[in-house]
Image 1 (cartoon, rainbow, N blue to C red):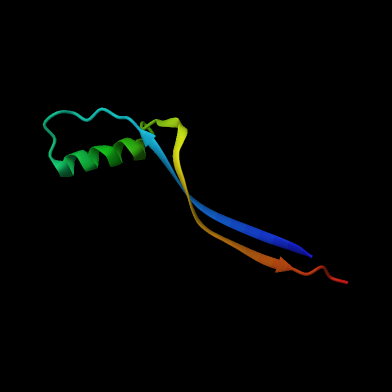
Image 2: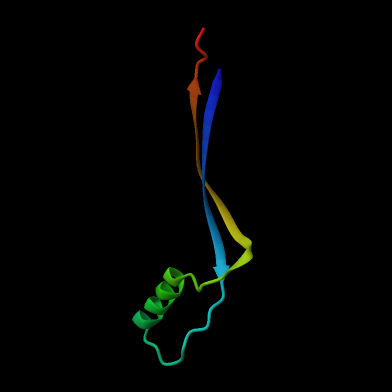
Length: 64
């Protein structure tokens, strides 16, 4: 018998970016989204936090 095990985790990383002065809150949000979408946002190598979400298993019976 075999099992396919699926583990779901939420990984949180940190990125430190410079925000131009004088932006409104919506403009800051857009700046962050633009940095992320362009690939310019560099996340730190260290993972900040991992949260366990769920685990499940599907049992597969061997055929005789």
